[in-house]
Amino acid sequence: MRTRPGRGIQSSGTVPSETVEPSAIDNAVDRYIRHVAIERGLSTNTVAAYRRDLLVYRDLLLERGVTTPEGISLADVSAFAVRLRTRLERPLTASSMARMLSSVRGLHRFLLDEGLVTVDVAADITPPKLAGRLPKAITIEQMTAVLEAASGDDVQSLRDRALLELLYATGARISEAVDLNVDDVLGSEGSSVDVVRLLGKGGKQRIVPLGSFARSAIDAYLVRARPLLSTRGKATPALFLGIRGQRVSRQNAWLIIRSRAEQARLGIEISPHTFRHSFATHLLAGGADVRVVQELLGHSSVATTQIYTLVTADTLRDMYTTAHPRAR
Image (tube, rainbow, N blue to C red; front, side):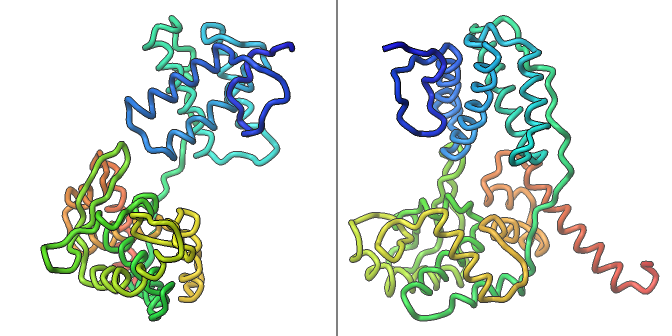
């Protein structure tokens, strides 16, 4: 049976109809993916995004007859950038193009560091400039309406209220919340839960306190709802369980949030990250120190957290413009 080089990594997930051998490009991409996953400790979702981006890049290189890392030229990288900008099927946003070019630049830096090439041909490729975008937060009143939409006493409402209260109380990423196990909610001996242990990007743990509303919602869920849900499926340590007793997935959590937002009749779409943005924005508006918010969010750099101070400044400016007689 004949073999074709360059198709060792299957982007479609289908079984190939013929035996294939990976090209040197495939092997280089695999080495880089292992590097970012193990040595840099990036999250599973980030690693998956890197792999998707680099499979697209790999396919273009093979179309151009390039099968080895040392065979890649600046013209090949430029052709990839042009294709991203000019594709007609599902045009990419500036942020998606920037991410994909960043993945390619990271691969080429790795190839140079590992001695697989002598020149970084992607060093001068610049991603499109992104417009400054501020995180979208909702008001305290809107957040309260969403939380109150899950105020029922049925099993599903108790679960939903506990999840939503936890997201708002901790600023957890949705992946961090659904990955929680029962043992990750902690409290003093004989008392209700006081803090939650979150596992963030790069495997970094952080302990975040819970407010009284979140503590009460989680206690009610653990006592009155989770035991019933757990009998419907296989034993699992997961904190949040679905109707069939399995761990709640990110997709299920997103659907829970969308459903409760619709019940609250907000008139706007919100996402899991809306809770994280609102958590940070409301804390800073209430006078919290940006360094404290940085720790609570699990940001490695305070510069990432400081974008929320711009949101707060915009709110203050709007209030001033509306209220001061000589503001306009």
